[in-house]
Image (cartoon, rainbow, N blue to C red; front, side, top):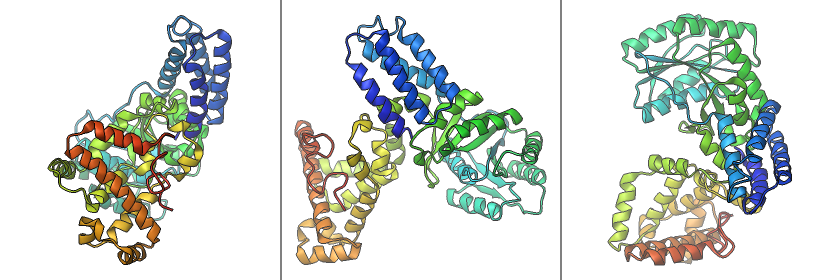
Length: 465
């Protein structure tokens, strides 16, 4: 999300950042470009107009023109106003009520509501340590109930069985009773969707709301519909007391217009964003971090949180102890590191949170994809345990066998081995306590041309082909 907007805005902002003096003409020109970038990102026109006006007012005032570093000050103003339009801070799920806390999920058909129910259940179970039950009252869509049952099994939460012949309100009331008897902390109710907003759907979900009195009523919307997402959310919020919005399919939305429009138009906070089909592909939405990513400042806080959550701490500790004792870093260790990277969203997921990515050439960004890591892991898995412990054993015939076993070419095996050698060299610097040497090594790997510049054919993002 935000890729195209980030590229446009970062170019504009970069031109202003180093200027010792800004004029009203500079600022008019910059805000004109920001306006075009926002409209191209499919941000709703009222949001664009309000945002640009606020930036102008602050930019031509003492916030910027009288600043010692006016270019930097303008960047700060833009960041603060982007943050404000998206909601200032993360709005957590409210569970402050007698158990079970009921969460009612609404949305149009095809927005990914059922998948999001399972993702939210997993989030509450793992990060909030809650006992969660889910139920589907969608008696219209074939296999909707079975889909939620399967997803509930996958994420390890309770499931209240229902049937298509039952009335939605009856199902919901029975599920609430079941949740109480099961001592569940949270009951998430998956409602039926339609292809468009219609009176029958609104009437049904209103009756469900009245019967359940949920503490949270969340609207699930496809971010790829752009400003239509904000307009649909507005229609729902007019008919239903929504408490928040969940944006789905953000991995397929390069513009980010929905994220910038929903809060302003509906007055309801974006609580989560979903990106992908995996059960853990749901993240709390932080407007300040999103604004930093839009301006190509990265999102290091989210990256740190992802590392803490996804990295196997026990394995990391064992590897650290092994390296510090001077033991050899082998290919099994390398495979573990690659797997940890995949758990954090792969190379593309990591790069998305790093500063300066919008300024990378598109050719470099296009080469970064998670399939490369999958191929490297496949090559290492094709080796025997002895070969992984002692890579020097891999002669020509063994490399040919490994290549055939992984569906690759011997040249691909050589590239993995070259990358392994560089990683092993870095680890040996650590074992000697030579942090300066390690930094020099890393700088050498980055090369004079920046990321991947000096990595050689096997070290860059597109190393394996």
